Image (cartoon, rainbow, N blue to C red; front, side):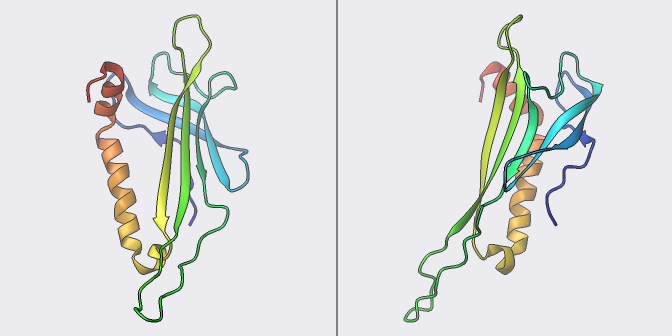
Length: 154
């Protein structure tokens, strides 16, 4: 099953936002990508804007153009000679004002998900645990992460 961002997305708890939700719509994206833009806001989110050309608010996922198969097994040792990796990319943009009266500049998150070939069939629950842990950590730590970016304290 492919990644589908269900709308509305319930935002994580963050100081200054009350019950944030984000209405998303599928957007056109380049080949091997899926993209969603934020078209509506729910809850109380003072001074937060939805997607526009001048101030983007979007999330994209890109899959490998061609998946890498497992390499050959060494006939002498019975071990894989190498394990290629399939790299998925994620990007999130959110326009924000660097100074009142100025044009919006995107805040940027760029991430890569590098999955060893073969793990999807040989050890799928490890992939599930990997994603679950990251999503849970980001969700439970959302307020601290936002505050860290605001006050510079790690």
